[in-house]
Length: 357
Image (cartoon, helix red, strand yellow):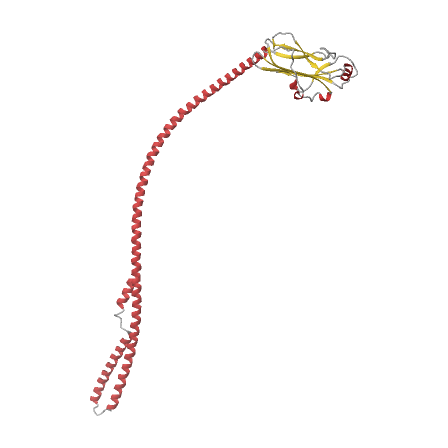
């Protein structure tokens, strides 16, 4: 805007400024004319005062022609300078006009941009007002929700107190129930122990007692290993299964002979039911000498080269319908190899081969 005003002021002042050359020419012309007139005026009184003094007409005409030529030359130079100056002023004025037009265009575009920005600002202000209104409503809603939450917190605090009381009562009830369960478990264990004690007291038990070994034949040419089965307890025992076997082996094979490696036979002399308070039942198992004569067999046993072994198992059921088992395993040994006398039976084998269940 400042540049436009400055251009208008310059354009308004330029035409009124006279050219320097033209003014100088006019001044010189006026001075020359004045000088001529003054000369004429000076010369007239002289002529009048001295009528006798006269000049030559030829000289006067020559002076006039020289003055006229000089004035014409000065006027032509002044007009050339004025035209050059006017051309420069015209170009400068055109440039200023173009600059002014461009400034007008820029100002118009700036005005358009400012108008658009003003519209955007109005729109933003309107949106901000709407957002402020929405935020105010949200703040109002949040205030209401805060009040409601305060009420809910109060209710929850009250309910928490009630729940704490309920939890305390539940804990007490659970503790009482746990104590009751523990007492019931203890009572059940005590009852079970009592039942087990009663069963163990009233059940039947079978035990094996070995008789001394007789190396003389008992039934014809057969040798036997004799033993008794005794019952203990106030109730009967019901035989389910019996197995027994005897063998003659070197000592190094006595401990390694398993039940699955030999054939075991039932104990036929044992009855199916053994009542309580029954006298010991006599039982036997055949011992086969495998063709050896007694005179040869006995010295080898006495010398410790051969050993007689017996093993068996009796499976039965008591009156409480529980499965029981009595197993036994013995080996016959003499006191020493140098002495001839009665030997004795000694337990051998694993622990489970000599037990009562």
